[in-house]
Image 1: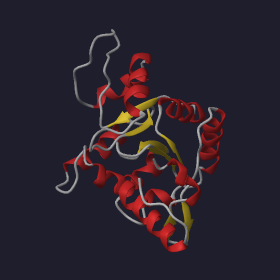
Image 2: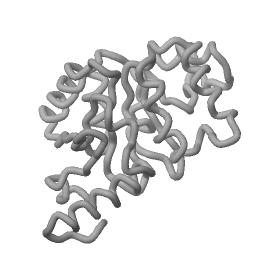
Image 3: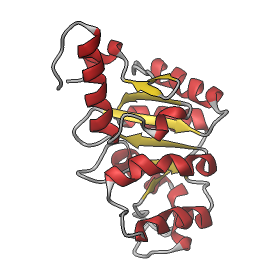
Image 4: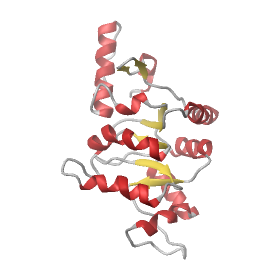
Length: 209
């Protein structure tokens, strides 16, 4: 996707391009939390949910089925527990694993309290935000991770990457996710953080196609 070549100047330029493209900034707040990156896929999301011992819910989306197996039509706090249903978990895997055109997508723990979910969701009402605004959410979502615990975030529909991020102190969970990913043959890596400087790993050049 980006020009390749040897030399530290070119590597720094490529790193800057990747960071701005995926996160909109050279210092993405998510990079300073425990994390790993991998290819977007249903297999990767399954690995995340298995490592977290959890079911998922798609932030900004709605369950598709109610408890009677009918199409769910509704909006509000009562909908969140429906994510636990097997049919809705299939929807999570199909639609939460990949980025949507121009939209922010994140899979969070389905055990998240509805009150917290709607507290975060209400941020979409601010003048400079929107529930579908990828750029705003990718920069600000890190502020909610301490309460959420973890999230799987596909990084734009124009890249192959997704990011798993956890609250501070949860390196063990990130390691468990990486182990599950590797067991499925999925490469996992991290952003390089040196003080305040964030770098896209040079070793991941082969994946940026």
